[in-house]
Length: 266
Image 1 (cartoon, rainbow, N blue to C red):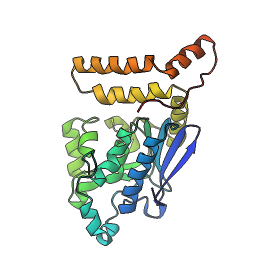
Image 2 (image 1 turned 60 degrees about the vertical axis):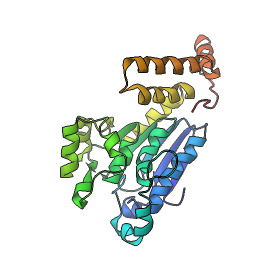
Image 3 (image 1 turned 90 degrees about the horizontal axis):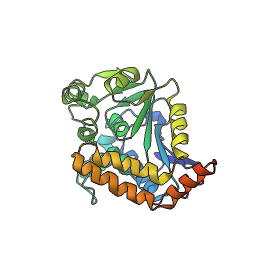
Image 4 (image 1 turned 90 degrees about the vertical axis):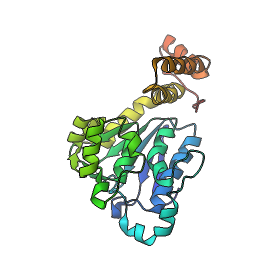
C-alpha cells in the first residue's frame, strides 16, 4: 500500500479508500499498486469479514490519469507484462483482485466513475450507487478498450450487444440507469450508508459461510449442473466440519447472538 490508498478497519469491516481527491482519484502507477497491495493485505487478514471500496472526495474514480501516463510512461508500459501466478498484469489485477478476496466486496459509487474506475467497481461483488452518479466505460474517448478485467466482469452483467454499445460509444449514464441495465446492485441517496448497513448485516453471519458462499457462486455460476453440484457438496462438507457452523447451531438453539471465530477458510 501507499499514500494513494488507505484502509480503515472497524468491527470486521474494512473500508478501502482511494485517497487522491484532488484528482478525483485518478489512476496513476501508485494508485494501481496501492489497490493491489490493499487487496493482498486484506486477503491475509482473517479478521476481515466484509470490504467496502470507495473513493475520497467528490467522486469514486475519474479513470486513468493521462498526465501521469506521460510522466511514468516507461513503468506504466512495463506493467502490461503478466506478473505473478495469477497471469494478470498490474491493471487487470487492480480491477479483478476484489474477486479473489475470500470476503464480499461492496463498491460505493458517487460522483464520476469513468473508464478504469468503472472496471474497479465492476470487480466488486456488489455496487451501491447514488442516483446521480455519472458512469461510463469511457476508454473509447481515448482510443482504447476496457483492459482492467472489464471483458470478464461486463459479460457477467450485460448481454454482449449492450456491453459493446456502451464500450464503443463511451456513453455516460446515471446511477439510476446503471441499475436498470443491471450494472449496479442498489441505488441510494446515501450509498455509503446503505453499503455500511449491508456490510454490518453480513458481518453478523458465520465468516466461513460467507466466504464459501462467495466461492460457491463464482465457481459454479456458469458451469454445468454436474460441476455445480460437486462444488456445493464439497463446500458444504467443509462448513459442516467447522467450528463456526457448530456455533451457529448452538446459538440458534440457545436463542442468543453467535460468537464466531475468525474465518478459517480461504
